[in-house]
Length: 347
Image (cartoon, rainbow, N blue to C red; front, side):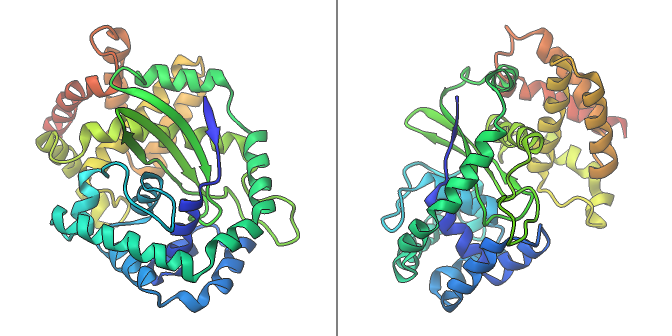
């Protein structure tokens, strides 16, 4: 069952990111007109030099980006008494520690302490409570466009959700301060169960006079949620050092796109994006929507330069025909690695 909520921790870290020099530049490349963000920037402008803001900016430069901060937010207890309740993925510690995961863990402990202090100095709880009507309006917009139970069943069946570990819940977290149009898919492995998230920004710009909060796009919500949920079932099977050889060889095929800035993913994220997008195309076919599947494939090739996506889409037929052998998508990943090597060898 889909669960919807505003997450106060996410509100705190996205506020911090907006106050940073680097995070603010990211935001300005997104959907620019968001009255609430302007209010936040003005209200908390006196805290731009707070140590939590400065350390967050430094971590951003090291690759601990918005997605990492949001993963941190949903994995820790509430501010201002924050502590991690489960491990982050190892690459998060590597980025936070400039290659040293032990150092990264210490840095993130320091960051949580500083955010606790930021929360208190900012009187964030008072600000949050004062804006409850805004958050209530956001929840109403999301609820009005919620995908139905059949949609969630289709997605979970395709990925084999629950085959590898029990699912604690699927969470939709609207985030009015996140980069406009973006979504993030952190997964939390806690107490032997998996929590699956889609943390997502407004889908469009809004004017101050509008009643809408920018979350009134049901079709975009369904597409984005399917994509971000997919990361919870794919990322853990690919994170370094897993399958380093096939991943490196496949990602090398996109050297030209990287050189021109058309593609900026890390190697394993590049592969994860290919697999998730291929799954989205196959899910459309399973749902009896071949035209939609064809449009998705064309869009990913033309707009995202995923030239080798068709071969991965085709390879998933083996997965679909042999679910007793492959109860989950992650169980099929080693076979997909053979496909990646075959693609690389043919070029």
